[in-house]
Image (cartoon, rainbow, N blue to C red):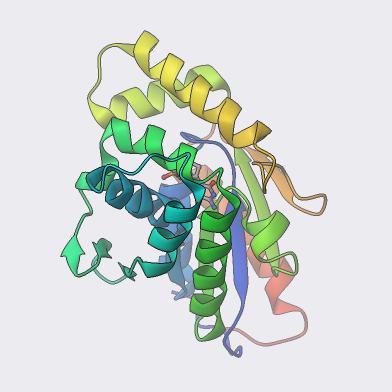
Amino acid sequence: MLAYGFDMGIVIAIDGPAGAGKSTIARRLAEQLGFTYIDTGAMYRAVALWALRQKLEPTDMHRMEQLAQAASIELATETNRIILNGEDVSEAIRQPEISEAASRVAAIPAVRRSMVAKQREIAENANVVMEGRDIGSVVFPDARVKIFLDADPGERVRRRAGQAGEPDTAAVHRQLAERDHRDRTRAEAPLAQAPDAIYVDSTNLSIDDVLEALLKLVRARMTNGKVYH
Ligand code: DC
């Protein structure tokens, strides 16, 4: 592990579409750096799960706003568990219907405001590798390092279908394309590469290759005259 002699509050932002490898890469990068890994998609998923359980219509903006504000979401980073209102929902939020619902609730501006505030609060007292869709563009426009991790749609479908053990790749393709389209075209904080983000195409790279490339980038940006060992 690399121990950097830095103050708290360093942010490494990793954005990109579903299936590009963000979670795996961000988690491993955080481990290597001794930073805290934050999966912001899990936060939107937790809000979506609660809304579904409450039978809330995503179009009911007012109640969605209240629900997002009231949600207690803990990211237990050591154990990689997601706790919603005291309940471990780590598995529940990975269901396909929650992926779809999360993408819908994430388009609601008031929901985003609540989540962004929580994300900024987390980074006040920690060095973080934070992954999502708008981390480098909106949440932390001054992040120390910004990566936009992408891959060909076909490869992203293969990875997602593999992870989910889902043989029907046509269905996965449809779901992913729909979600991507919604995430990229929504009015508020759409998925977009920040102008100063580094574009990394992981289509033909192994996880280790991507990790190595990112570690090089991070080292170059972070040493900045300071010492690390
Ligand atoms: O990363 P993920 O697939 O778990 O994210 C679930 C949904 O949440 C995704 O479709 C878009 C949304 N999301 C977002 O809008 N902004 C983020 N920072 C993270 C996720």
